[in-house]
Length: 395
Image (cartoon, rainbow, N blue to C red):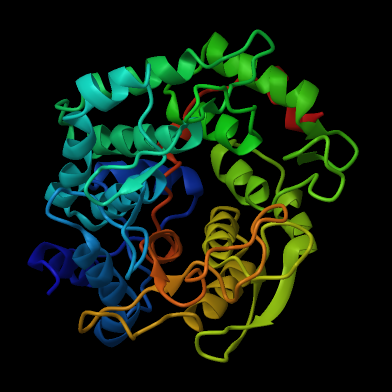
């Protein structure tokens, strides 16, 4: 059953809503109102029950007694990224205690897991915390983003040490060229520099200083195609030179990023028959092989379109995502969205896991929920006052 605070929050915004003229005004209001965003005025109690409350109910039910959430039903796999997203979703819903449940798990492991790894939390683990796998910088950056939002929304400083430890570790991964190493594999070797992780770290570390300046210089020199005006994912691989999430996340992270990057995401657009319900769904693939609809990525694109006031494009993406909602959850009045429409390849040539297109997934469901709640988890980290001459995308 959904907690009363979420129900009152959602229905309360049906009565008290405000019209926002600009994105800047929305950004300010989001945090003034204790992190509880305004809902579209055309919402009704009936479709709130079907579109928001049922997904929220599913996410709530996924949380285990130790505070963690598995990445999908019928699995014992726990992702640091998914748990950071869950904490952000709880914050957007006003479920502060549930967000704290996620944070407490990691806060209690600063002196064990974090210290023993020379910084960084495991990217993946089992639900009981065992079998930790590599410390990927990008997912740790997402945890810091969630912690930053928590402090901004609640004013509570109980996780300041955790946030500082994460920030210092991320800063320590910066190379002389300004790029960031991706963390460490299980054997202690460094993970190569990954564009997605680097831009997430840019957002996660507050303020604007030489760390951020170094990142922008690295991106300009090494990961920005001046002719196409796009961020590059894999410079050495012509077939996978670009990645779809760099379009959406890049736009959500960098203020005044060109809207044309969203238009150019059409190169990933395709249509598939969803294996779980037979629906024809259009959306975005991870890369240009267009063999699958990445539902999480499609929800990210919807939010980026919303941020750019490209309403038709955002609404179309959300309509497609509605076709993918699965109501055959283990819990009543609950539903979620799978990770993909069908089993194909993820970014590159690696096959998706077997259940990627058959069970609701945390990441896809939460990015869809962010859209419905008008909540951009990256808004806070955009406030950096970047000097105009250092915005490489303007040249």
